[in-house]
Length: 381
Image (cartoon, rainbow, N blue to C red; front, side):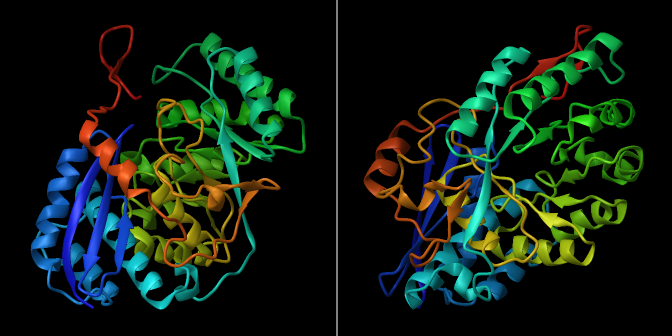
């Protein structure tokens, strides 16, 4: 079964879809995207296709090796995200050709339901509380929130208190039986994380995500030592080699993004690496339906899975299309706080190609927001 062609579809709000075709009529879908750099990622996919077209679609691992190591310059978000989408599509083809879900090809399911969390939105504590309650009313048993807006590298006592007040409001709203995860989004300096996180310990967060920027991964050990809250990171780490210092620093939760960290193949390996460090897997996924479907295939195959991110209500626009790009939304139905094991072939979803084509005609030009501190210097979004 040879690869004979492909198409790329930039679709709102900020995604890029890939359809990979074979000479036996089996096609697979992937989601190769660097948010804010869709055109750049698309070009990287096109360059990869110069090698892939004409190749055997079933040699997934060999293609992964060539695409990630065949060039003199390796790694980084663009190359690894291009490879990730291709890898997803190849696994989709493999599952469809054999009539089984991808998790069967990864060793079979180890669970029947994957727990998911919903995003809490709002600025003021009251808004956050209302949003959290709404997520719980949907049947979710976990939520995630960003505990701050813009922060100075060493901010004031008042700013620190606002962080505590925001998290307290959500904890009070959902009670002790619902988990609350926190996403610092790299807005905290190492010093701020060490200062603030101990104050949040009585609120028992499920984990704190990206308490330092990825370029300061080597400093995670100081944050881990400063708090009892489990530390999570990984959405801006693109390979198992990038994760190595994070695991050595003692993170509790690895968060590779299946559309950035080399696809299903590499995410599965990162999960195994996490297991050797007594760490759990919580894949990052503020993306579209193909990326989420790919995450779920890994989630059902790895023993150390914790929880899955998903973008319904995440706030990138009501026209996010997570469900609108599917023929059947049933695979993403929430049941008892989670999603049931997918049983369809490949990634377990059917993409509505007609809708994807309509959306691609409009395209998108999403860019990462630019934030600045009060003194005019650049701030982390």
